[in-house]
Image 1 (cartoon, rainbow, N blue to C red):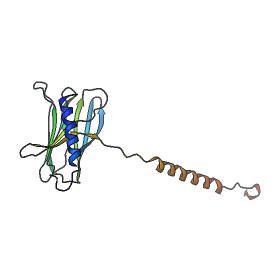
Image 2: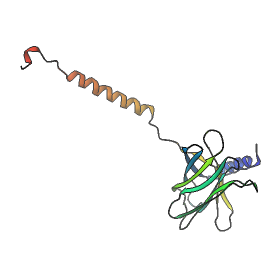
Image 3: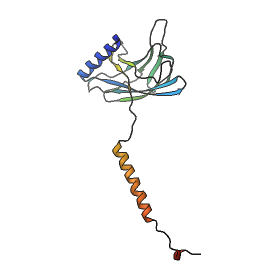
Image 4: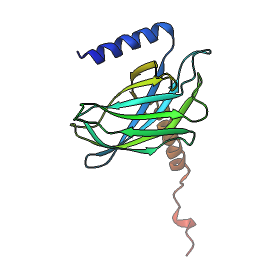
Length: 186
């Protein structure tokens, strides 16, 4: 286990104990070949009185990502990317901070997107992130991005829908009355 993963795990455990937790959800779309796009949604799940989240960074592992570019950012946020640099070596970063007001507890902000080339196998996945204070750069919270769940109807809803269709089909079948030869007009 790497030191970074151990620190993330300990940080998440500490945040769970204090009730102060924040999440960055993602979806990922293949744009063709090895070009992909992450779409991020920030969720401030902290309690009333927790600090407003005004800045965050999402890290792109060196050797897995290249050609990062910002493809979307809410109007009141300033976003930038830093390319992974094998000369240092250093991960790439998607960094964004609020120009006016950040995210208060209970709020959700979407619209952050990054296009990139993925050098790994399969589809890109979760990433390490940090929320930080934009004035002294101290880390407020950190964690791992989470895949945003896709809304799928529950089996009970699908069963109810199927039963309704069967009742309608049966009712339409019973209404059809065959014409008698004597009723035909020639």
